[in-house]
Structures are given as structure tokens and as C-alpha cells.
Amino acid sequence: MLRGSVVCFGTFSALAGMLGWLGHASPDPGDRLVASGSMFDDVSAHIAALGPDGGWQGSAAQAYLAQILAQSQRAKLMRDLDRRTRGLVSTQAQAVADTRAWLIHEMIIVAAVGISCLALEESGLPGGQQVSLAVAVVVCTAALGVAIYKLVWLKHTTSQNAHNLQG
Image (spheres, rainbow, N blue to C red):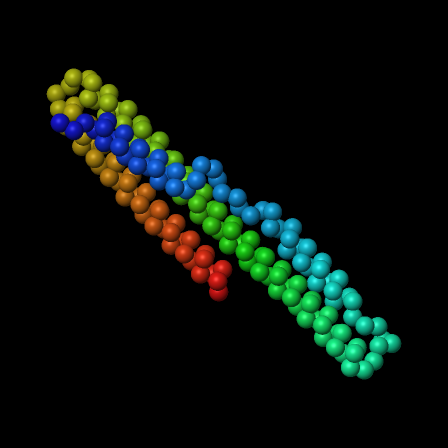
């Protein structure tokens, strides 16, 4: 007869595998990207300040001014892209961290139920095996269902973030 503790062990192993797919540490939230956004602000301001003085006239001055403005706009574009990337990295890191935390909590619950099932199985009480199996099946099915939902949600979030970055 199948034992509830074995079901819990299998579920715990599956959850551990899912956790492994998410890496072995919390993801980098992109905090290092904060400084680069202000760097692009500074670059844009410096470039804009390089405009020709009042003594410049003619088409050369206008061409130079157009180049300065274009470079300033490029720096602003880089700043905006950098901030957008930082936001997406942060959002993705938070989604992965939330999913990891959820899986860890599920693993703790399944381990606790597994220990309880083992105690029931070893107690020698009549029906202990059946109760152990019934409890394990309910808890482990719910844990796996929620874990799969969380991973699908993470995949959806990742897909949205990738789409937003391309947009």
C-alpha cells in the first residue's frame, strides 16, 4: 500500500526541483542600474551646454547646434531606456523572489505533513495508513497545483516583461 509519507517525499522533491529551476539565490533586483540613469542625465546636460556662443553665425553654427541637440536627445533616450530596463529587471526579480518564497513555504508545509504522515504510519493505529495517505494526497495535490499555477504566472510575467522591453 502506498504510504502518505512517500507521497509527501515525492512532492517535496518535485517542489525542490521547481525551486532549482528558479536559481539558487534571490535574483539581482537591478539596484546597480539606478546610478546609470543619473549619469545619463548629467551627460545630457553637459552636451546641451556645449551649444555655440552668441558669436557663432551661419550654417556651420546651425549644423553644430543641430548635432549638439541630437546628441543631447540620444543621451535622454539612453536615460529613458535605462530607467525602463531597471524597472523591468526589478519587476522580474520581484516576481522570481515571490515565486521562490512561495515554493519554500510549500516545501515546509509538505515536510511537516510528511512528518505527521510518518508518525501516523508508525503509530500502529488502525486506519493510520489510510488517513496518512488521504491527508498526503489532499495536501500534496494542492501544493503541486498551486506551485504549477505560480510557475505559469511567473512565465506569463516574464513574457509580459520581455514584450514590454521590446515595445
